Image 1 (cartoon, helix red, strand yellow):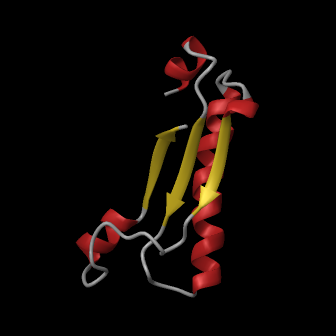
Image 2 (tube, helix red, strand yellow):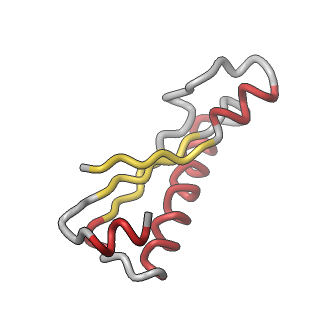
Length: 84
């Protein structure tokens, strides 16, 4: 991703963090933002223009699987990237 963004400086990207539904909404919101921000910090350290990336915490609001077992909860703990 860092190579793609450095080779294409016109691209802007959104990094969104997600969590499962274990814990409070506010804790999950904070955790998901920290998760996304860790990726943003990595990209910046690797030469990506910080003005081209944004971190967003989505918390538990956008699951891709039901939170009814550990395997599904693991799927919901993720980072997604969207080219803007």
